[in-house]
Length: 281
Image (cartoon, rainbow, N blue to C red; front, side, top):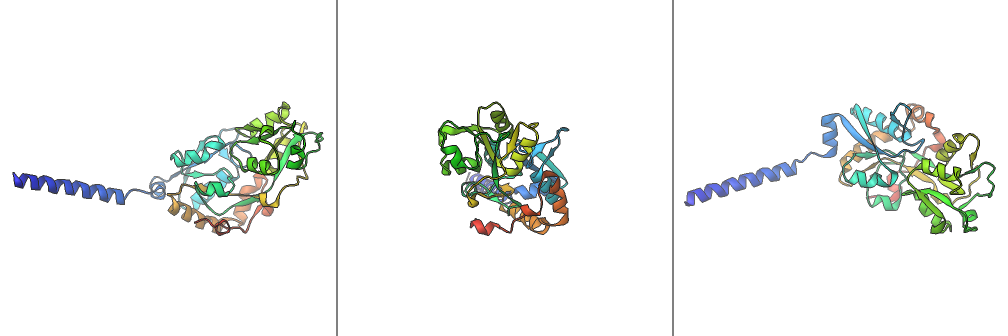
């Protein structure tokens, strides 16, 4: 009886040891990506940062950067997963994809939730208004002065906080899920203006057939300059670090400039800022 109990105890210890061993050797995201040759990127439709073209292929500044960098790392396949902007970080945390490649700005709040790579662009914001800018809107203060004015903001973006800090009331803000909804809000006069990156607002104005325009002179806090980067789960520091090393070698190269030029980016969008500037651990 004692011998049987001893054998049972030994077996339990062996199983426990194996479980602990498997736990210790659990495959990391980067190891799985290397094994499968595929990385999953999360994106939200926003031209020119990340979007599906007319053929259904995902492109844009950030996905093309992700494709190029992972190819340099020996990963040939990039699978794109579409979600709404506000669901990007929750989707990453829920393991729906491995990397956010959507031109996401680095902000203190987001740094509490994800790991960022070095920023691969800098960009300021502006307003989308009806042709001729009939309300003469050139700042958040201009909108704040008239409580009847409405501003369309994409939910989950930094521009919401910028508008509030600029004096715009919550009652004046129309939160919408994507840039298409922003465009429609201004077109149908549900909003007097929409706010977003200068490149996005210029693109929407170009598609409005002369009915809208991007405000050329938008007076904003210089601290609101946006810095876009790839984002990773907090537990995937090894993945972030290997991607970051590849980015540092590639960003600013002629190949990089040729890759992002079709989306309106040029050397004026390059930045010298690095993660250390945000004091990210």
